[in-house]
Length: 414
Image (cartoon, rainbow, N blue to C red; front, side, top):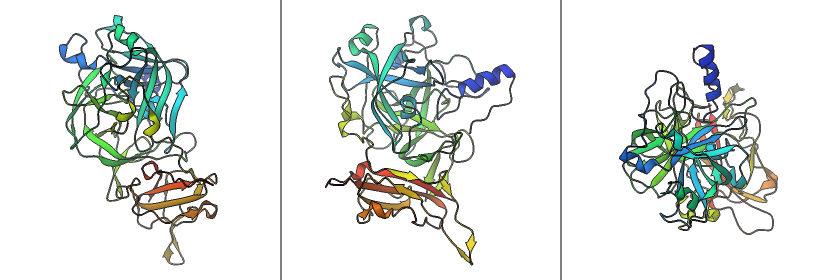
């Protein structure tokens, strides 16, 4: 949960406003090390001219970083221009298995490219009109459509960047981003970061009422050590250091001790482990084929979010093991209700970092949804973070939900 620092009334009021700057990353407090500002007049900044600010200007909006992108260097000039950002920036804090596709944006959302501190007179706000694809299911990515074409953007001097899949070992990276906080100059800054291999990551959020559609689980999050990533940096493009093509977007980071609400934690040996000071980016390799050479976006190969629906009963994402009953420790139940619009379910359960939902190995035989097999199923006795992977089949259909699009529910046993 976000807490206000000790500060004067004016600064606290500003900080309270800025806590909405980014839904997963907190604004920077005072007196922290910041990444250096980028200059529009520096030749090395040329590859960041298509990076800018995504911002909502009506009601409780938020501010993130986004990038003008396309599937080729020469998209059709008449095609609507697209931007890439984080899923939680594009559509907000959607549920753990939710996918948003082809949905209009509300009023007051804009993208301002080339958001440098020394070209303010050239800043232009381009309306964001649609969400083409956005999800926090197993990743954190969003693609949005602008109210101008690639031709119009090029006439303004903005050329889209390419996207590409991350291949082989995770390299050292660099990132252009727009952090916000208790400091001046909320403009494009530059960070160089060291990386390590992907890790299983989970994060949750506490609102007025505990949500039943969290925590989020990102089994292939990419950890890195970056200076100066805070609220507003989410959605920023990730580059192999010095290169032009984008391989991912900044997602979240751990700035305070602990695990849970606003505190992403890795899972190692089935146990939650907080890596203080670590940032995480989402790879976009699964999106690359959706960006077509003509500038269009075809999500038909992506997870549509139409898999078997499983409702968590009760509140929270953590269930303690029951105290001793008649001299024995008794586990609590999973308490998951399967939507009866599906006929059959196959599922498997295991430690979250050791149970790949996209692989068929370990799934049980088909069971009738009417039996609700997940309501009374006992949780593991050993404390840890466990994942439930499930695929379903609708009545009258022979087609099962693809393994790669399995419904995922996380449970932390304490």
